[in-house]
Image 1 (cartoon, rainbow, N blue to C red):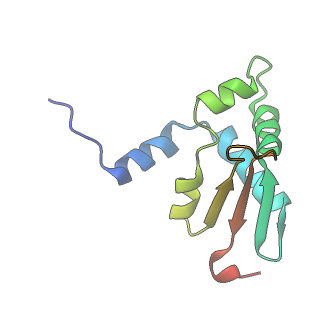
Image 2: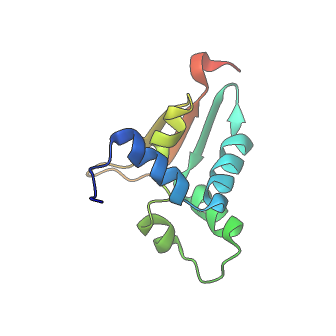
Length: 108
């Protein structure tokens, strides 16, 4: 048996399958908590704190969350129909990175 290249769809499926449940639990909580008029906007730091809280692992750090790619779930949610925007400061800008999720056709 030989290893074959992964397709984009398979890669996304594998990302979902290998991500711990508590990560999606945290994402879902933050999205729902901030949902108003068809839009959920929240800071990256809020999501990190929620992931750490949901993990029940006192050894997990914000670096681990970032390093393991648990903040890079936008494609997963886009596949489910959300319009997702991630915004972070560019060169010479200072503000906290944030996510903005919008319901399809803004069904509020």
